[in-house]
Length: 309
Image (cartoon, rainbow, N blue to C red):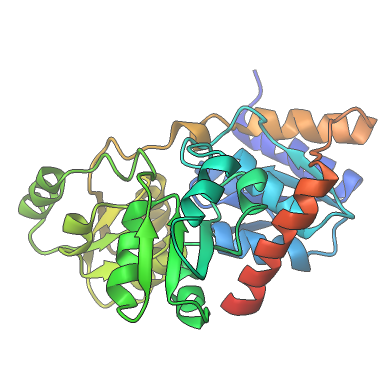
């Protein structure tokens, strides 16, 4: 039986042979982050995919992230480490439902979270991530904003943009959304000296308790740069592990051990090695998006990069 180090060494050799750039979301396991070329939250991966010189991109994350990489890089070959890795939030609505909702509001911009399918992005005006949502919504000329699908993130944006009117639909991340006020209070009671850092996909009652609310990249930066020594992390528990490895002199605690994204966790280093082997042999399936959907969805992403830059 091979060791993890041997599998990772094989992946590095295959990367060099194939010229593949591996993009890994921050929620991936540490052993995958170690062999990735680029790591980060959705926004960083979006921009990095566009800026990379590599002609072959392997995405370790979930399906909408691979779609985003392909939309921003139509001329490149995009592969998924595990095609079964989906996102329940991304698949909550159909394009028809969003278009029907838009008709309710006059002169309304449709803003979609990056955690959506290409088909949803195709009927929206601009895409946002948790780190770029505030800046982009502020930059839009429209006063009325239909914000989809995460109503917790949308509610947080509304609280920071009082001059806008955000119309929300029932939707969001089932894992961040599962955290209760009791969970947060219990974590604070257990670690009274710790600062609470939460993702805006959490419920407003939890965000209101936090010392810091922000995207995964923001939480990582805040904790690393802070003079404080203890933190409760209100996002995927993998971030707790990453921070503890990066800052051994500090202490990090999960807001709840149930905040685990199973779709992010199904990708393994063996998946990565297998796909790289198939790429080397010319047998790996590429991600494809219907041209008519791709052209329209690309517009919302281009607007994200333009307005969020």
